[in-house]
Length: 292
Image 1 (cartoon, rainbow, N blue to C red):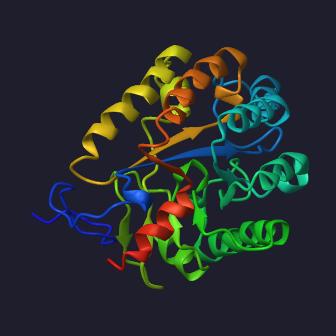
Image 2 (cartoon, one colour; image 1 turned 90 degrees about the horizontal axis):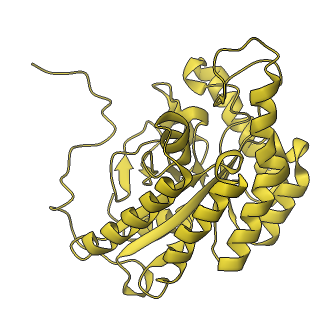
Image 3 (tube, rainbow, N blue to C red; image 1 turned 90 degrees about the vertical axis):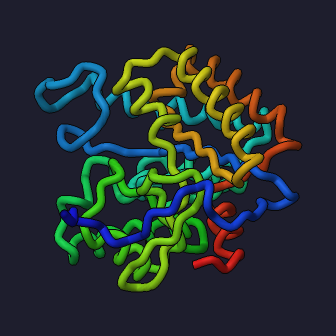
């Protein structure tokens, strides 16, 4: 029996691959993915405190907007205090909605990666022409503001059509964060040539953990610490990537931020042992190894 396959990459056990190291001879690379999102009012998608209410959904829209108005700024203070870089996954609508927030991340030199136009839409529901136009629009907005197009992409809701990797590679993207199947970067086959899949966490991610599984703030912080400590040990055998996915309207809430500070401090205190970097730098280093 042959099951349908995406055909993008082959199976490969992590214990049976060529060895390599990250810069400085490090074995574990760590990056923080900060998701900055903007939602349409009175329509569209979004995590919900109280599910199922009619539109306009004031409660949930305002809760998400707290992240842009307050939570993201508290997280910036935390990142600055711990001297941690970030990969900012931005809905391009944020450049018009909250330009000061994007200015602040640009000022600290964070990587800006594409995250669609808004999280009120899914590209899996678009036809190829509409999806290509959406990618082009979001890319152009980032390039105009940042002076260069983004290298990486995370789809809103991690939703892909069958053509998404082909469209991303064709649009000049070097890596995608949509696929969570590995702890190392993996080359994907596309109609426009190779596209690198960089590891993106779906466990150490505040939406699945806190919104879906209802984990508490302390439990989520413990998850980050335990994942880091275990991966640091595992990286003796294979070089690994650990990502932490964060949404300011969730972990930017004061009581959660206090626990997040504890977890990120734990990582920052081990910076001599690991490579704390961005998803883009991870992708660039791996691509430079020449293993396609």
